[in-house]
Image 1 (cartoon, rainbow, N blue to C red):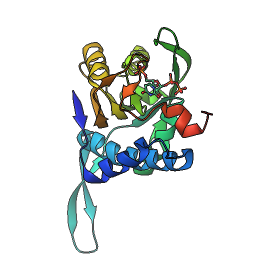
Image 2: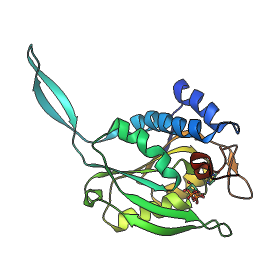
Image 3: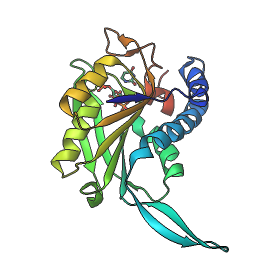
Image 4: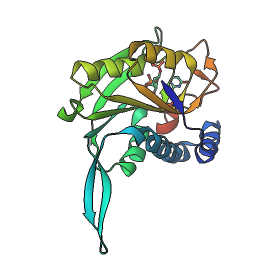
Length: 207
Ligand code: PRP
Ligand code: URA
C-alpha cells in the first residue's frame, strides 16, 4: 500500500526540488527537508512501549519507541535522504545497499551490501528518492528479507503507479510513503514529470 504525504509544507518543497534550475546544493537541502516530513509520517505506526516518567509534578504515562530502527539508503541517491531521517531518529542504525539500473535493461544490478544485525527483528526503512519501475526498491527488499528482515517500510520522494504496483505485488507486506505519486514512466523509464536523475542532481554529476 502506498501513502501520499499531501501536506502543503511537503508539496511546497516538492515544487522547488522538481524545478530544473534548482542546483545541487538546494536540491540536497530540499531532499533532507522533504525526507524529514515523509519519514515523520512513515514512522507513525512503529512499535512503542508504555513507560512511566516522573515529571517535577507527578508520574506521567508516556510512550517510547520500542524497536531498533535501521535505515537502508539505496546507493547512490538514497544517501541524499539519510541526513533527513537521522535528524528525526538520531539513534537509527544504517545499512547500505548498492544498486544501479543497467542503462540498457533498466534492471537493478547489486554491487554492495552491508547491514547491521538489527535488520532481523528491527524496523527497516529503505530510502531512495525515486521509485520508478520499482525494480531497485523490490530488489533491495529481496536482499533484506534474505538476510532476515521481516518488517520493511519504504520512503521515497517521487514514485508512479507502475513502481508501486511492482513493489506491492512482490512485497504486499511493505508500505510505501511518498511525497508525490506521478503520472507515468517515459520510454527511458524516467518518472514523468518526476525530477530527473536524482543521483546526478544531488551530487552534481550531470554536465
Ligand atoms: C536511480 C534511483 C533508484 C532507481 C529507481 O538510481 O535512485 O535507485 O534509479 O529506478 P527503478 O525504480 O526503475 O529501479 P540509479 O540506478 O540511477 O543509480 P544512482 O543512484 O547511483 O544514480
Ligand atoms: N531514476 C531517477 O533518478 N529518476 C527517474 O525518474 C527514474 C530513475
